[in-house]
Amino acid sequence: MLVRARRVCLGLTLALLAVVAVGCGSRATRAPLKHVAVWRMEPSERGIPAPRSLCVSTNGELYVLDTVGRVLVYSPTGALAREWSMPEVSVGRPEGIVELRDGSILVADTHYHRLVRFSASGEVLSLWGQEGTEAGAFIYPVAVTQDPEGLIYVAEYGGNDRIQVFSETGGVLRSFGSFGTGEGQLQRCSGLAFLDGQLYVADAINNRIQVYTPQGELTASYARAGDVPFRFPYDITVTAAGELAVIEYTAGRIALINGRGDSLGHYGRTGRAEGEFATPWGIAAGADGRLFVADTGNHRIVVVQP
Image 1: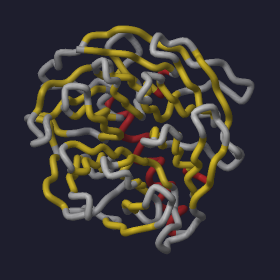
Image 2: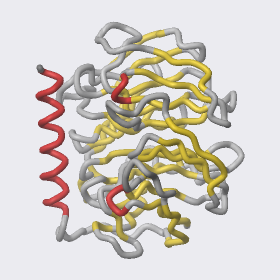
Image 3: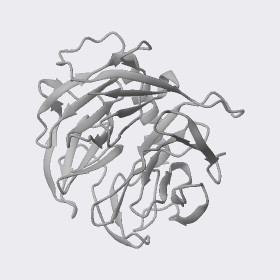
Image 4: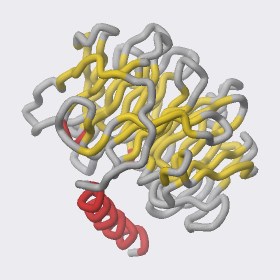
């Protein structure tokens, strides 16, 4: 009942924040980014698809999770190269995706409380975890990343609100974080990224970016970029320039910061035109400097670059 109640509260929070965001002005300094392209979502018989999460592979392909339970793979020029479906989708759709250093693709199969590892062509290689609160189990895993040593970090919400750390073969090593608003606590930690040996966490409902050592020690917390507060920071990625790009769900914008949390500017606002985003869920960076935004409410992928 507690998990269900918190899921209902989360839905109400998202709806309220989305309404509040419309029409709000911004004191943000414009980031040195420009619009490049819009990539449309492939049609589906299951409904009108929208992107939820994405990652860029080492060969420059863009992997996209959508709202109908597919993995879509785009070439660097935006052509659909291949696609496949999750093993099951009737209960809910996945949210987090990352390319591991062995070239396989790891997906947080959120509503099935597990991780699914695919080959780059879509073959299921393994499934990890089950619903639960014990070590190695999950309640709504929503974000995944891998550190330079190969360890895998998984963020959960809705019951555990923690980050678990696994070996490359799926052995659970440790966890940190708990539900709450205090230092080091989490509420919907929906984005993970490593920069200079530190783990940066998009702590969405708490409207902040928290920074941890790989062992789980909190080293910093940023509630704003410059003088502009974060508004539901939903995902985070490391850019080709070694900066951090944060996508803000309710503000409909990208916030650029350095590793110390200093603002490097903002791009975008809530809307449907060029340079605007509607409830964006994800962001990923390419080695060529491009940023890819899951512009979820507009059912599109937006490409920007310096």
